[in-house]
Length: 114
Length: 156
Image (cartoon, rainbow over all chains, first blue to last red; front, side, top):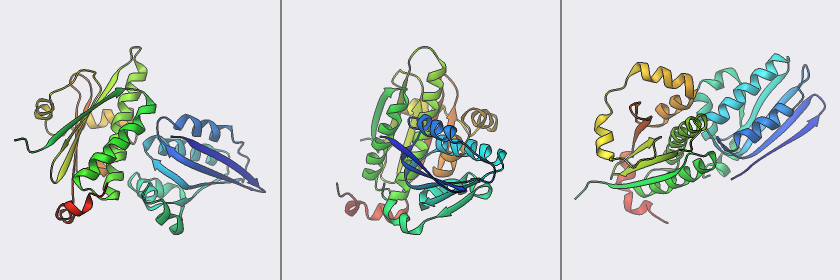
């Protein structure tokens, strides 16, 4: 089990692509990658979670911490490509009310079985 | 004859084994006849309970074990996660867990963050016992239609 994190900067937008399972074992890798990211004012950090096949409270905690960091720097944060499973977790925990979350119906079907 | 099959898994309380437990739970839940969504719920809830134990083990100097007991019934699965290394008597531990204690819940939330919230949301019943190591005991029921489809559902 592994996790891959890639960033691509495109003007005022940083696209982050997370691929793999986010749990207590892989969390330190994700946390480190997100911490290393330089956040400038007005930047939009958009994390693509369409390839995230597993997420638990450890991962949610990391996104909460990162969200706080981005907001503190007066930048913007958005999660995209969430499967129905992931959306459910953000809804149960109330995080969907706080964060900007975009689902991706096309990906939903492909990722459902993982 | 017992009304259920009992399976016990013991692993070192280390982060790299949490995903192994999730895979095992996934396989057992498929045997009972849960749907994919229900299996995902079970994986997360069990993962949360095991992760709690792993985190506790990290604070201690000595290396611990996590014990996961699963009772497979026709229409439900009962999962127990304990943070002590000794094998336990499933029925005995089950009988010791009383009604939900509101105070225990709050202290758990402070430590484990969203973990217990998720367990409660994804399982039908969750009980926590703090005597002699933390034990989480949780149950999930199969929806009625799935029980009737039981034979057809096993395609391994």
